[in-house]
Length: 255
Image 1 (cartoon, helix red, strand yellow):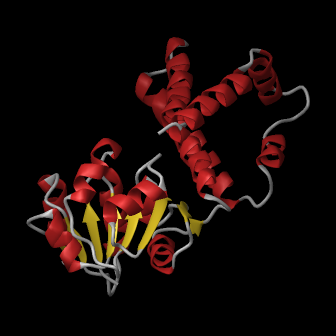
Image 2: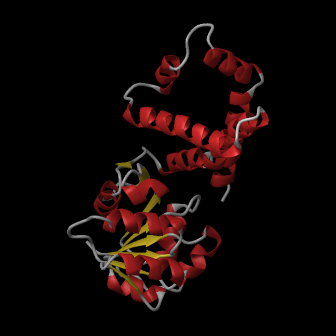
Image 3: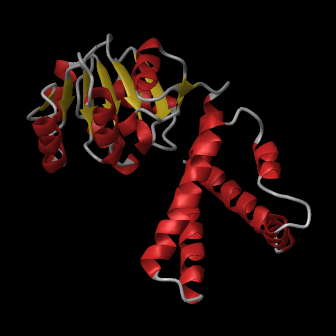
């Protein structure tokens, strides 16, 4: 299968790498001229990747098109293109509903919303998508796997969950900074914090039970983990997280 990408940012680069690196027979991939430096770097690394002269040239070259531009310019970009009924448009834009995408990309035959993640680069992105579609499923299963919620509105919940990345990293940065405040070298504190939470990430990827069960495995009665968690809960941290997620969901559904 051939793929065309409109937009050449981080997500495009991640998916292209996942589709191409160390693959014996990778698909042909066509990139838009936007962010030529990204496209040229990818085309230099992978023989199956080619930068086209225009977005329309990308659309003309492939029937499965991945849209990865900034949401505010999506309508302008799509209305400027001529799609065919055999096209499958896969949108990687947060908060842009299917009815708008179908209107802007008519007469494209199929339109899918998706939430690909940067780990697609190492084929470890579990991508939420809606509706189910064989071309989209084949793409995302190739870079880690796919999950299809019951309704389009549920996709916004998945988008909300991904809005926590920066906050999670800031939380880790706070821990490393606290260690530095106690006299630990900054480089060592950062390396240690990254290591212990990186290992915890492996536990998350390998566990089959609930997160509550995994939490219990990392906490003993009267222990340090229990004390820290109790302090956070007492100070309303979980409630603050829920309230912030509610705000994200409201923003996504008000578009």
